Picture 1 (cartoon, helix red, strand yellow):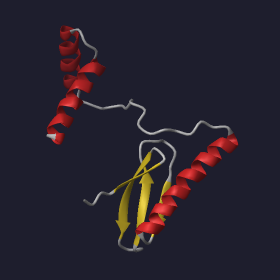
Picture 2 (cartoon, rainbow, N blue to C red):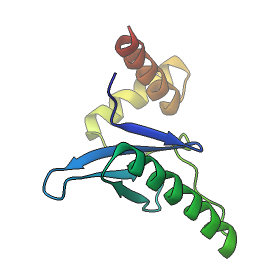
Picture 3 (cartoon, helix red, strand yellow):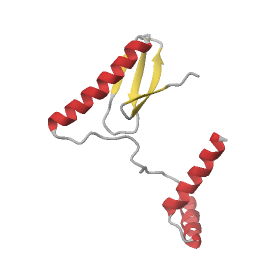
Length: 115
């Protein structure tokens, strides 16, 4: 199976191929800091990702910053006001929070995907 995602040390990256420059480019997901890397081969790309993450962690330690960790479990979603109203009223009627409603909806959708 071919995947466009890589993982190292708890971080994930999406990989794309730049046809013009003939290189693979990776972007670390789920954090606000911008971490990017590249390579001409899978081996070079993998080493570049490892170096990128290791350098990021070393730099954070050096300046006394807590490194960001991906996917903290919180994200903002923009929806239509009417959807917001319907969700809020449904959740209140069911005795749950909007967060619980959204989490359930996501779980239901993921269950369908994982089928």
